[in-house]
Image (cartoon, rainbow, N blue to C red; front, side, top):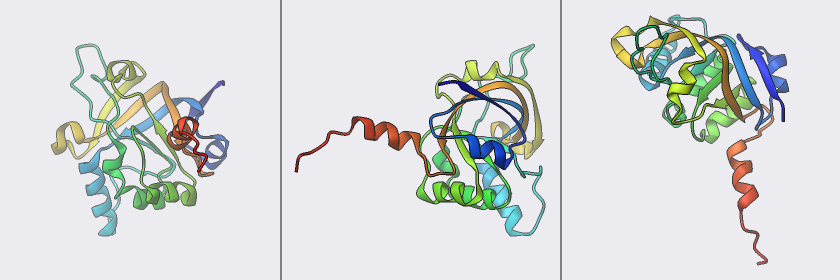
Amino acid sequence: MSTIHIKTPLDEKTIEKLRAGDQVLITGTIYSARDAAHKRMVDALDRGEALPFDITNQIVYYMGPSPAKPGQAIGAAGPTTSGRMDSYTPRLLASGLKGMIGKGNRSQAVKDAIKKYKAVYFAAIGGAGALASKAIKKAEVIAYQDLGAEAILRLEVEDFPVTVINDIYGGDLYEEGKAKYRVKSDV
């Protein structure tokens, strides 16, 4: 299987080419946000307010970084559990978000929204935050600085490695993986 190189922002043409299981390298701008930032963004949308950045065609990385060492753009930058964002995700997808990076399964509501709004869910390798940070060339807090490690960051990435987990066709790499090893019953 070959690796697919994509540039941000995402467009539907790119998303339509991606399938569960594809290995992808992302270059461009992505944003980090976790549950506290997601709650604030959805609350802002509920009040009719603008978000702190235009999420149209963007990718959000569910990550809370450790502090950067001197000479580094960011400290360890591994993914956090995506399920914590599930209650907010359909609303953000409806508002134009096109990609998410995290780890772990997504709810059925999120998988349905991925198909409906033509988006994609990627996984980054958990436990490899120091390695992931090497693909992040620049990190800048752009909103909710009071949240500390959960503030929204604008990240400039180069060949950031991810795997497509959920695609617009209903593909789910986690379910496909489990199915391969399920014991077939003669009953």
